[in-house]
Image (cartoon, rainbow, N blue to C red; front, side):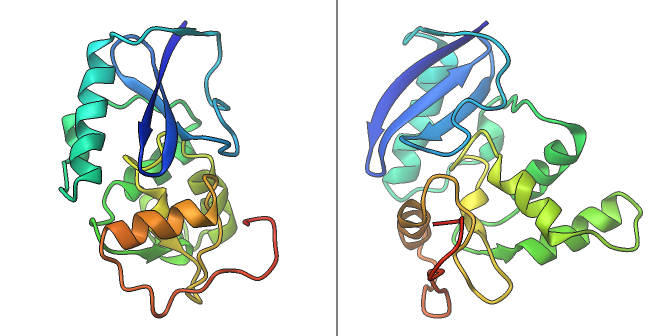
Length: 179
């Protein structure tokens, strides 16, 4: 059984999900794969301590602070490969970006493989169930394309600008499934 609550922030309505102890999901309104990693029902419950902690974290983030990811107990559900990719996302510093290819190189090292597909990494990044806190918005294409944000390119751009990322070399894809 999972519990959910909603809250409003500058990027719109956010839904939080928990197993009762840890944060299991954070989705933006109309986000792709909304609730996709959770197996089971979600019941409305607004007064969980983890929701209070998460809202406090988000309030500080949206006020321009850089709260530590480790402040919150996170429990994103996913297969081991995705779990490892999500851990790497947590290492991307606030206000910086990296590429799918760079994460693929790190995953190859972690898995003791000669190489790794950036597309496989992209699939894991796109299915991140705890947006913003696990900062998948900080991942861009090798050519600077802002492709691949399940919450929407407009939200990705907003979050990057909010963090002070230099947007000059980043581009919005003209066509494709990532829009």
